[in-house]
Image 1: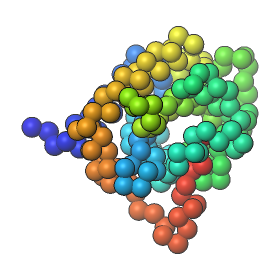
Image 2: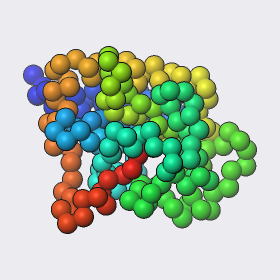
Image 3: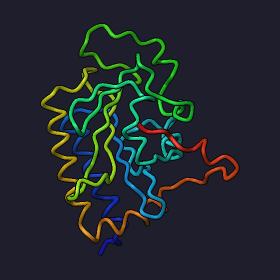
Image 4: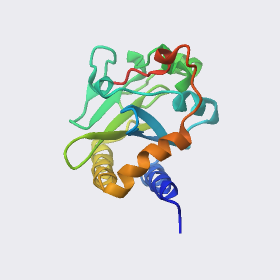
Length: 199
């Protein structure tokens, strides 16, 4: 029998792999709230390039950061999804290691639906009582196009289904252990530098 933490991690990995294969998304990340401190952290970084994985794992988010419109210029697609475009530089100083800055600066969007380095979409994961349990983050597509409205809607359905599953008592109780398993050591002298002020 699998240990509980493994079952939750396996679930997130399988969801990320489904998104990667079914919707031809290049990089899929999933983050969850850690019950021990209420912060949100990346748990799964599926097909994310090795050079930026550690930069993602070293970040944490507060609840209010997900709704801070003053720091990130983005386009709300729905009440669950938000599109961030590279031209709007939707990153703070602590996030610079999460993408290829040199490639982004060289990229030029040739059409409105073209996807370039630095673009990403956040999709919120909400529980049965509408509480924010986490988020999915997708970046890039195999055909270098911004995901269609139909694809985004399908991803929102997956996020809603994942929220229902995560709301079950057993899986929510595992989140703390999973967070401890994936957390990276942090510099205690400057903890605020590790907080990614989330959109």
